[in-house]
Length: 307
Image (cartoon, rainbow, N blue to C red; front, top):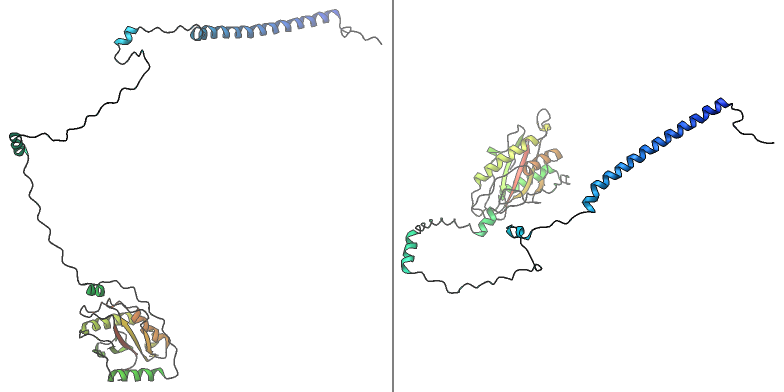
């Protein structure tokens, strides 16, 4: 089978129109191509005019030597730069120049008079002896009371306390004595004191004022700790005895508190124990130089002291 041309189906008029359209497209394509070529050519021409004289045909600048010499900030160097020679330092003469008498007198007249020396400050007072200072001013750690044993023994606690109080009345201690209960610990209606006994050597020092302050401080601390069962209508009763030691700074010695006689009631014993551990006692008298003061105190609830 013989294939014919694709233009066979077109007539003459249609072929002429098709050819005209193709010619128009070729003409516009050539115009666009010429336009872009003209733009590229002009860009290259402008760049050549601008940069070629600056970098290709550059003429070195000629500087007149006379003008350089006339400029103060410029220096003409015919030879390579070298460091200047190190300066020679001359030693100062060891012998000082002499000043004549006339110049010395003029200097004395021109100099201001020397200020008068300030009066010497008074010497501080001498410190106290080491032994006294260590006893009176040395800080002591806060005494931590030992945990009391409120357990009841085989004997009746009231009988134990009564026997101990009777023995204390017969042997009041070395250099000490009992404080009467007239000023006792009676701030609370149901509480009172059988007194306090000094057990250690007082070295002849009067502790009356200190024991009075001890009573007031213990009374103030003891009152809010007393249980409500001591008040009417229950009126719980009991008596107990505690032995303890006081350091020179007024604090209780750690581990020195001993519950020698229990009241038989844990609440009553704890209230009295807290009255001692919670109080802030004043320091011992300054005349006392012992390591501690040992005391025995009685606490009564709705009872009268028995001796």
